[in-house]
Image (tube, rainbow, N blue to C red; front, side, top):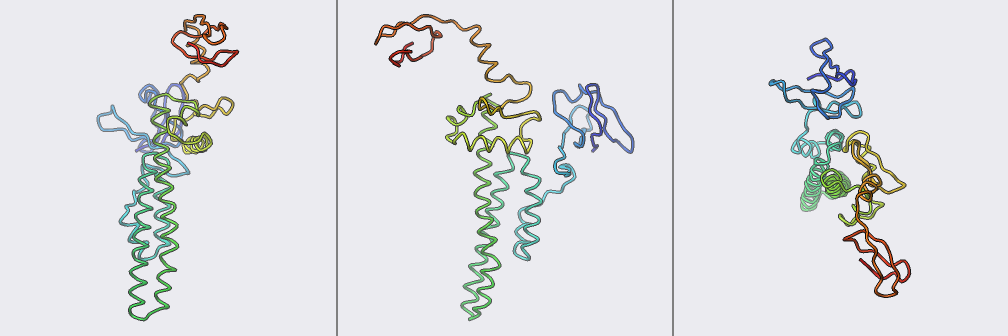
Length: 267
C-alpha cells in the first residue's frame, strides 16, 4: 500500500518502497483522489482500491474491531469498551452502509449490558447483597441506556443516509422538496442530514448544498436550474383555453397547470 503525496492533472505521485512513483492520472479514471489517501494496487496492475484518510486516520491500516471484542471489554471494564466502540465508530461513520451496521452494534452491546445488570441485580438481591446489587445497576445501566439510545438513532440515521444516497446518486433527484416527497422526511431534517453527509465526504468531493434553490449539487452534474432551462428550450407549448372562465394560457404539451385567473386546473 502506498500514500498519495501529490495529485496533478497529469499524474498521481505515491510513496512506493521508499521512493516516489508517478502514475498517469488516467490510470485512476474518474475516481476522486487526494493527497493523504492510501492506494492499494492489485497484483494484476489493473485494479486498485482507494482508502481515504480522514481525521488523520488511514482506513487501510486501521484494524477492524469486532463486536465480540467490544462486548467482552464492556463486561470486563466498560471504559475500555467505550474506547473501542469510539474507534470503530470513528472509522465506519464515513461509510453510509456502516452507519446502520454500527448502530446495531451499539444496540447489541446495550442489550448485553442491560441483561447483565438485571442478572447481577436479582442475583445479589437473592443473596442479600443489597449494596452489590445497587453497584451492578450503577455500573451497567447508564452505559446500557446510553448505547441503546445512540444505537437506535444511528440505525435510523443510516437508513436515511442510504435513502438519500440512492435518490441523489442513483436516481439523480437533487431538490430537497423532491427528496422530502420520496422519503417522507421534512426538508429541514434532509438538509441537516445532507450537510452531515457532505461533511463526512460520503458524497463526492465538491458536492454542496444550494440553499437558495434548496438543492444538493454534485460535481460534474448539472444543477436543476440548468437542466430545467435546457428542457424548456426544446419543450413544445400550446395555448389552452380554461373551461371555467375562458381565459387562455400557454402551457407545455402533456403538462397540467392552473388558470392564472380562476386557478382551475387546465392542460
